Length: 579
Figure 1 (tube, helix red, strand yellow):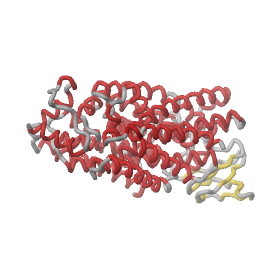
Figure 2: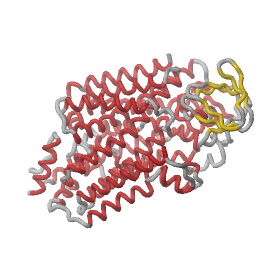
Figure 3: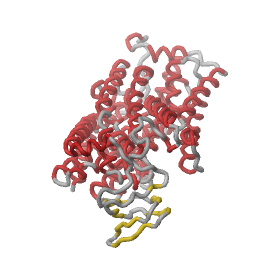
Figure 4: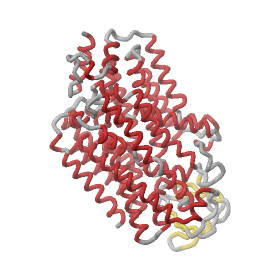
């Protein structure tokens, strides 16, 4: 009942706004960039709504529960990336007149192979970012309603695909702006209520963490996916109406199992994880992989999130909806302010979650801590009401981010790889959503924050060097750009595969494998520079650079913006520069 009351209004409003966008959908430009008529205030709200994903609304607090307060460096990187984007990318990207990042890449360097490679990178980033959105939608709905995991996944996929297929970017803009305001209100008010409701004892315990070693009361734990518990002493639990004793040693638990641990029972370990509140939990650094090099881990995450933000294709596409470069820069500046207001509060949910719902670490579902907290402090009407509000905010987060990601993935397939029209774009949206749903169904055990950070890492290692050098270095050549993007993409892909399927490694090497940004980003930059220095830029490269940096009113009147379809965009740009 709570889930229905929370999710239904968000879903209905999203679909209604999508229907309103149908009348404005006539061209590819309408679908992809809302005809470039979005004001800075509306655009910044939409960017913020799109950017505050499941990883922000739920994931940061979940990481604080599991890994400690050092996880608050994630929102620092998320927000700092917009400052870099404001200074280096926002206005030049808008002045390019491109519709997508691959569009910009081909127009800047006249290289169809680079366009196709950039589109492939978008697909990788999109999958890594979309899967955790749908996956967390399934987990949240299962926690608050008891439904099967796949129900939330399918609902999220259906709503996003229908809304986007109907209304395109214009519908996505209004949906995301509305959902940002909704998320901000529904995140702040419950946080204040929780602080007032828990009382001074819980607040004191939150500020002085102790390791989660014994259950404070009878605690029911539902395992959504299979795990291996490390039982240190015989532990009695109740399951399916009978009482059993877990033997000392490794104890595999099947997905769907539900165990009730009795008061004062010892907390078993979970293979590959450390219990909340342990030594170093309050240290303001990120100990990735438990490798023991927190400073290196913190820098790795900051590089990935900050430079990755600057290269996220669905965020970059947002700046193409601005009327001009000045409006794009204002959009980036306002976005920093809006995100800063939101990121003041995940830490509150994280430290309270460590005290009130530490058992979530047993199931790997710590990113549901936000929606699980209200019922822990009030099992009456107020607890149900705030659970519903947070569930609504969480679903708004999934939908808003998924809209932008699905749009850019569909654009990469239909506009950049297949050169299709408006009808093909709409069909691609639905098919892409179906594929992501299928990928999300077996992903319940994967950590949303880890997947999203990998998406940032791919963006940082591919589009960040391409954009910075493409905008600010006139000697960049097409072979150099292709080599750099390919090296960055292959390096990060190899690290992800190694982390998921390779043999375990320890020490600083474990950090550089799990989070390769400290070496993959310099490698991509260096490859682009070295390969470009062995070539010669085309004669019109300087003209291309001037186009990116001159204000619109300072240009030759004959240098109009790019055409609205893929072929005319590149052909006009090349003809103009060759002249």
